[in-house]
Image 1 (cartoon, helix red, strand yellow):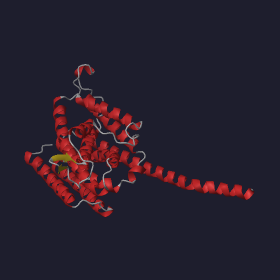
Image 2 (image 1 turned 180 degrees about the vertical axis):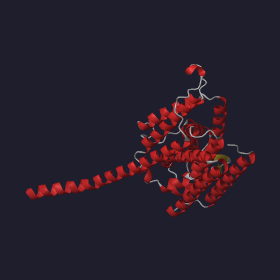
Image 3 (image 1 turned 90 degrees about the vertical axis):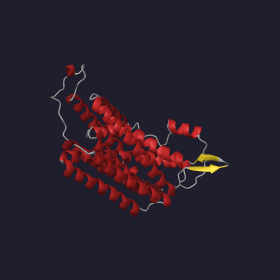
Image 4 (image 1 turned 30 degrees about the vertical axis):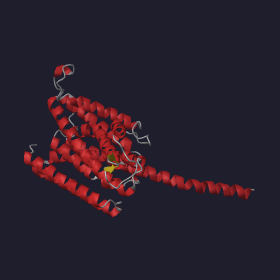
Length: 344
């Protein structure tokens, strides 16, 4: 896959224009988006991603398109897990509802910039050291086990990272909200606002999630162009998803298990790939191991769709059963109480 320099500049330029317009529109009119508005915007970004995948298919073939779609779906599903933490951040900092959209938008822009740097570094490391796939694979399997055990979803409180603690201790801040302003002047001093701290919390927290998602997508494609565009498309639709499925998130009770299976699958795929390109002297004498199965992108894409589909359906069935059981319980208690009263 050979992407010319003008292709990079054009892609990044167009996406930058869309994001800048989005930021300025929201900044001029902070508000709580309606379900219809969020649905329309989300449909726009999802449609744009699908059309971009078709363009990749037309320009570079079905394999590249499959890698883009697999990466985009993986990043999107991992981003849904991010929303749990985003909700905790908004609650922890008591962000007014009308400002949440602005905070999310700017936080996502910061996340895109930081992920772009992370992706570039990952590409350099992968090209220089093939054995890094062993590390990526092992890390994803470790993360999958941790997720399956509930190690990352049990916390109902948000804990500030060290950067935020340092910012709050170093820079004078005001506790009052001043709209969407990040800095205000008071008595000749410049003070940062809660909005600045919330945006930093969202951006840096997403970067921590990138420690899982970037190795995961590099397990599906080694093309930095596809890695970057899949991440951008996933993040661009995240704000609308936040307002649409805030209630649905509580119904995805098996999300952690589904993501654990997904990350575990990609982790195994990465290790298989590392064995195919092995050059570590203490593994098979530094020679590649060709007997290990090579999982094609079509199988990977099918597995991702199946895992996410089963996770969603199983979660919704479970919450529906629980809701019916909870509704039936009071009726059973009332019935038994009535029987006792009648017998007395």
